[in-house]
Length: 345
Image 1: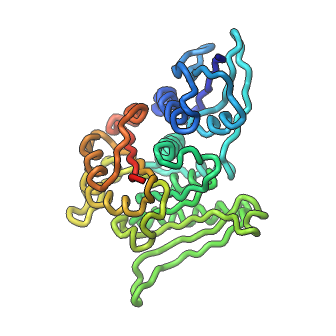
Image 2: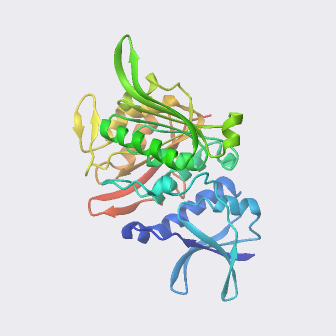
Image 3: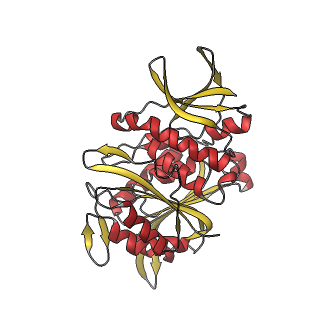
């Protein structure tokens, strides 16, 4: 067997950079089980030349394996270890657009882009469709989408993206950003932006965009869709059909800068009340075999409580390794964890 080493992408966030090696190790286990058939051996972390790497053994890394590994959230480069030397191995990625789609937005409370990608990855890998990651155009919903970090990562992968958020400022900021970005990058697209009226009343605002990274794809109709609604997440089923999405991926409010709003209690610090009301709604939007991934602050909601709420919504919580290994500190007030659940096929 040959030994391989993954170099971790540098992160501007020092705390996340410290956690990224162990998070990548756990993410690699998920990729191995979901897409690589459990062929990797001795997945570990190792310091080589004073730099931390995630290492593994394999008989070989095929072109398809390299295309899979290239989508790890924090991978920078892949090497084969030959004696004391590192031989570069070419990796490819699903990425359809320039990376500033993900990185250019800067605002207080933005979730780290590498973590957003990890959350999307491990949710996808828990679904019944994991083996189709490189071929399937997944449909992704973020029901608490904020300013669209998850939506942008889904678009980057070539997926269809949909979002819901009740904050008008966040909705309008994202609508302005994405339309400006598409025009500046000269990405072929068609956008519709405005109020949604029913029975002569404005019930929401909505942004719909049809786009393609390649002009020939756009002409042939091989397009991606982006659909974002400014409305309370509990009303998501008024705008999207049941069993419409392969994946639901979201950050529950951490209870520090943003609290959770519910119909019964208004603004509260814990996301438990929000999950109790919203999880059944979200579960209806998920197709059989799909998966839901949620990140949250364990200081304001316990894992077993959150897992119980997803189970009550009819989902099967994924508790086997590595899905117990994504907890990490964000700052003094936030200890973030990941919870993933599948909808029975």
